[in-house]
Length: 103
Image (cartoon, rainbow, N blue to C red):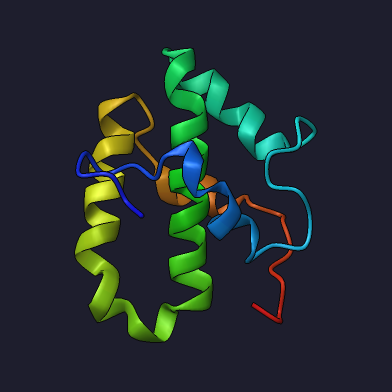
């Protein structure tokens, strides 16, 4: 569930993980490593990663229902911009994790 500040907390990992085949918290994921280059506050990286993954799920799984989640996504992007990640869409476009078709 999205926090009122716009991010998805680390406690959402189970819900988010259910949409992917691979472990989304693996330290080998290059997209997550890219976040550390743009976000100066290390304590925000995990929240930013969960938020990026949530945006990816919204766009790729629920794209046909965009009118239902557009404002939620905007709030998430505002949060990401506030911590230094200006182009959340660019990071989402670079995600190479495979979605689990059964979720």
